[in-house]
Length: 149
Image 1 (cartoon, rainbow, N blue to C red):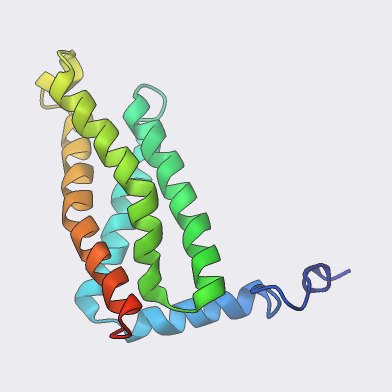
Image 2 (cartoon, rainbow, N blue to C red; image 1 turned 180 degrees about the horizontal axis):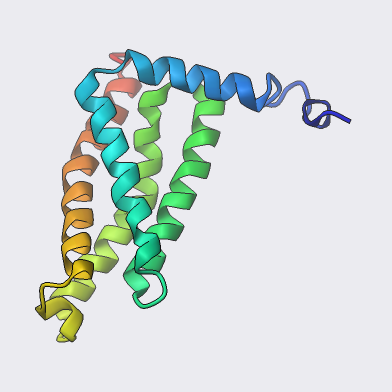
């Protein structure tokens, strides 16, 4: 039995997952090269968390956050068919992560926050990435809601 036959025809996924990915890739290809590089950077910086998950809660939270982001982004895309609304998934999944890391970073007296190791460098780059991305994501959602994207 094919997977598509298990999904009701009224479902946003009724056209098949491959078609969904093709449409995402098509829309991503239309974005400016700098936006494509930024999207790849965001995936990379979150993926690096796998090297720290064994020892650090922040990395575990980042890995769960990017996983949730991808699932939510796919669902949002399946419903609205607009790659710019990936921003909504970023806002919903990354904001709690950013708040957690910043609160922990500010309150902690732990050695991992005082020394310049690979974890702290990665964590700083992750925070910087989210701090840059989230305002742009808010802008994208507003532009989509106002019909400008």
